[in-house]
Amino acid sequence: MYLLDIIDNFGKTNNIAHIYRENILTYEDLKKKSDALAFYLIKILDHDQSPIIVYGHKENEMLICFLACVKSGHPYVPLDSSIPDQRVKRIIERSGSKLIFCLEEIVLDTTNIMIIDKTKINELISSFLGKTPDIKFRVHNDDVFYIIYTSGSTGNPKGVQITLSSLESFVMWGLNICNLNNKQQYVFMNQAPFSFDLSVMDLYLSLASGSTLFSIDKQMISNLGELFRYFSQAKLDVWVSTPSFAELCLADKSFNDLLLPDLKLFLFCGEVLSNKCAEKLLERFKNARIINMYGPTETTVAVTAVEITQKLCKSYNPLPVGYAKNDCKILIIDSDGEIISDENKKGEIYIAGDSVSIGYYKDEDITKKAFSKITLDGQEKRCYKTGDLGYYNDGMLHYSGRIDYQIKLSGHRIELEEIDNALRELNIIKHATVIPVSKNGRIHYLTAVVVLNRAFEQTDFEIGLLIKKELSRILPDYMIPRKIIFRESVPLTINGKINRKALTEELQ
Ligand code: AMP
Image (tube, rainbow, N blue to C red; front, side, top):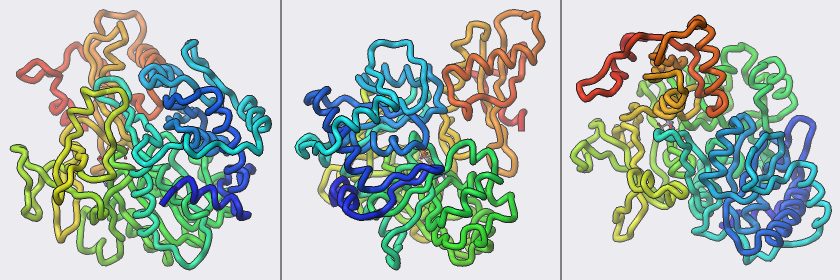
């Protein structure tokens, strides 16, 4: 498979690559415009392979910029416009990017990067339209195709590097699982912002099959009425989202196969798919199949999958996450580092094989902690220590939580320690920690427990607002604790750390 050739070849058809509100991007335009922009990039960055940041939301130009970057030999770093400017600045500094495509406004008080805004992007495309970049400049097999930044426990986001061959392996496996052979072209829904690796699933399964990506934006997600009106014209075939988003839609009774009569497939990944959610979907969408997939960003979107049927819902609670893809091996390792071969015995999930990232960009220390090499069938393979707990049952992998402080909140991956660090950076705070508050086994919101370093005249409410405002400069909205509780002191463990466990029990 050569992904870029496949996508470019659809440029000879009349297929639509992307629909976002009233904006339509054809495959022909995607090819021509990404070629033009790649030609420009080769001209100005001349043999340099530094990552290029693409900042925006669901604009057509996001796709054009992604392909232009890789056609000119640069990995792209997708950053959603909901990411605060300070965090973008931090990522720019850590990535060493020399150029940022900005499809939405951003204030960057840095001179270390060339900023190309939407108007300029379109001017450049017009100037170079018709030019074809030399394919020798493209990102090749073991070159990095994209870098996705995820929350990091040290306080800095981690840049997960994914190569073209890992992406191609995911796409081939994913299309096989979709098994959508009775029609030439499909409509895939894109819900996740492009800065989350879940979006890689809909974006590249769609582009690699000449299908249409139908993007929804954050405004629609906050208004189900508007979203469902938009859905009614969508002719969606494939739904890709976190289970949380499907649950949000299921809260409205009109979310059923009358609204989405063409829907054939739900692809879920990123967090626990509950039996209740799967059962409701099977009931409301009689002709759709559900696939539960599992995998961290570090192993290219997903590495296991299983179809969730009524029978499976009755047989397992929680539901399994499935069988590993062919070129990956999933190991369950005990606390002594030994492989567990017994079924039903829990251990940490390690993933080995070609889907595993080559490591975190420019961060050897944390790369060494999470990545290693192992020998599989006589060949050395990359291996990633996930921090997830799991076990095998009936030959299928089952997920059973985390061994650390990484959580999922409405599908968002968060390292609680990153928020702790951000809180402690505020000079009014002496101690702080963040506690996830759960309801019915699912994390509902975050509460920050804070000890101030002196008495203040303002009320707790006012100080809480001030803290949230400060946090919003560096953290995305979904990482801002909903509640802030003030204490004179916090419980400590014997070795002097904040006793998160005691606080968690207290706050449920
Ligand atoms: P991300 O890197 O954002 O894709 O998050 C990866 C993490 O999400 C994994 O390490 C798991 O903790 C969790 N996760 C992914 N898929 C599933 C799933 N199907 N069921 C339960 N948890 C999942």
